[in-house]
Amino acid sequence: SVLADYIVNEVQEVYRLQGVKINDKHIEVIVRQMLRKIVVLDPGETHLLPGDLIERSKLMEENEIANNANLRPATWEPQLLGITKASLATESFISAASFQETTRVLTDASVNGRCDELRGLKENVIVGRLIPAGTGLVHHSERRHHRHPSHSHHKDKKSTVDANLMSHFK
Image (cartoon, rainbow, N blue to C red; front, side):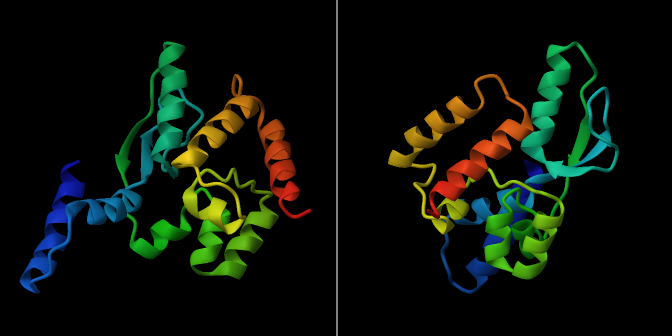
């Protein structure tokens, strides 16, 4: 996006002035995390609400469902989060808790009954599982396929994740 390119160029300019060479891809990874959230402007005919701050992937799923049903999709705009806020605003509460404000993050997750689906590298490393990359990618793809043959209910996913997670602590 234009915003992401602008941020990468501005950050690179600061480093260039100091004589430091950094490949763009490293900064792009951070910027992508900072731009991961979006704000819903018009929910269209989806289950979203105006002003919702959600993951871009969640919006894409909702819009795909709306498009497949010939309904009006939601419109949105990117939301730029600071690095700290972006790290804490991840879908994985395990990953967020490992970064900062551990007590608050874990308390919030517990009170709200959140379920960590262990999709990212960090949370899988924390609980001692194969990461969803390289040789672990096949394992995670098969696990996801068995869990969601046709997008099963959240309760089914939650119990599967809870059982998988608890099996690592036995």
